Image (cartoon, rainbow, N blue to C red; front, side):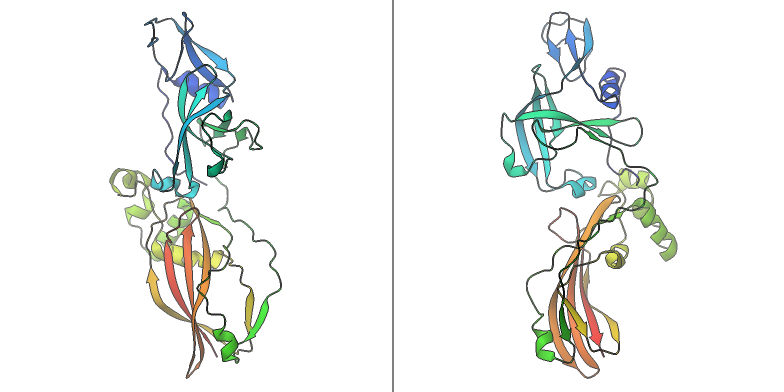
Amino acid sequence: MAWNKPLPIPTEISAPFWQGLKAQEVRVQRCDQGHWLFFPRRHCPVCGSRDVQWHKVSGEGQLYSFTIARIPTLPEFTDELPQLLAVVELEEGVRMNTTILGVEPEALKIGMALRPVFDERPGEISLLRFTARDGAHPSVIKAEQSDAAPVQTPVEAAAPKRVVSCKDVDAMKALVSTEYSPWSNEYTVTQEVINAFAKLSGDDYWIHTDPEMAKAKSPFGTTIAHGSLVQVLASQLKIPMDFEVVDFNNMVNYGSDRLRFPTPVPAGCKIRARMRIKAVEQVKSGLQMTMELNIHIVGQDRPSVINDLVILYM
């Protein structure tokens, strides 16, 4: 999968820090007077000494401050919500801006003990994140392969379904609910999937297919999937339903009463779906059921697709 999130660009001064992370080490500068410093600089901000050297440290520290971002800081981070944005104070006294992994938001506490997590990214960059010192989160996150297939999360085996006859109008109407089903599996909308749809549909507008131009000109800061693509990807999302309709000769997709695309899906994001039965009515040609199908970016409350799908049982 192509990495769709921004990455740091090492400079001459900061290169040893990033090289250390690639080697799964935390490296921090210290001057000849014993002052630790971060961010990387050519001189000590405390005493002015220009004799500063890089040193390997444990990377352990404590949570100095944090905030929980429930709206993505950039569109590319919608699949990481909520983002646990933090300032960590290392044992040496320097502080780093970072993100916390493997900890529930309500478990975050100022002063909690933390350890480093080396998050490998495609290419030559690894990122420094943190997790609870006594937590089970791995210390290294391996980079995904660039040629990996779209990630699909299997759905657990479902319990036996209720069997409902489409000839039993009252039983069918009893399926109408304000409650949504459990979530489907997850599916990653890669740039490759978007490009393939653009080629097939003929809609190759740059906002979908040109990451560099989208980064420079798009209000979303990156490429986004076509709304119609996200809609048809519903076929890749297996929603667990606790009922099965039987006793029909044909089942027809009769179209949509409502179709909206409220929220864009940036390339590289994971989506999932849930549904509810919105209406059931007897019509001349059979029994008509309206299913409200909502597709969301994982972690987002607002849907990316709202589709009132009309199904006709004959």
